[in-house]
Image (cartoon, rainbow, N blue to C red; front, side, top):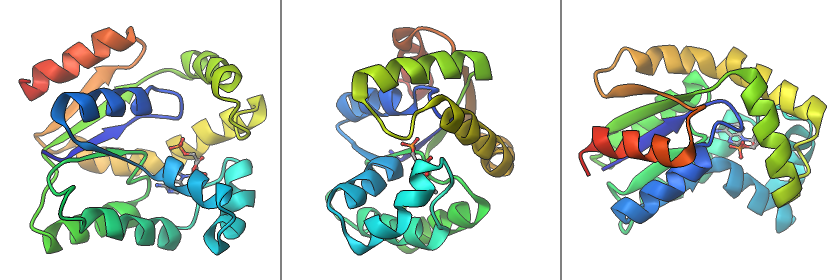
Length: 187
Ligand code: AMP
């Protein structure tokens, strides 16, 4: 089963992705984590993206799409992918479609964790303290939220027409959200 989890920054995508990884014995595909790893290792990609990341801007589609390729064609991970933070643009959505077609896979479920701006800001600030993420200062939070709404909303509108799309109230407690997801997946 391949699943996409959408939601603005701080909506709990990562938390629910990890829940599903355990529950379904799957793999989390977090482009945010993959990109942070490139920065940590100081690779040429890392050097290229550090400014955008720190300013809360999106990384170029070309870079993110390339990182995705290896994951999708990994035979151990086929049909066990939990996408967290990808696709974020129409170009990425098309790329994902292409790669899945080529590898004989599809998206089985799409979840949108819908949360208002106020709750998101509170959550991200909490996470900033816990995880010490450098891109999470107040201004960046707002920028990331706005970028998400501007650029990812059209992607969401595209997926929301599909019958395997489910919107979930992301302001609920974590366990509650997981429960709702499990119910829909029938697991
Ligand atoms: P995340 O951990 O998903 O909140 O992502 C953190 C940051 O990584 C974002 O603010 C972007 O700068 C970058 N990023 C993560 N995923 C993508 C993506 N699919 N496309 C472009 N930029 C991304």
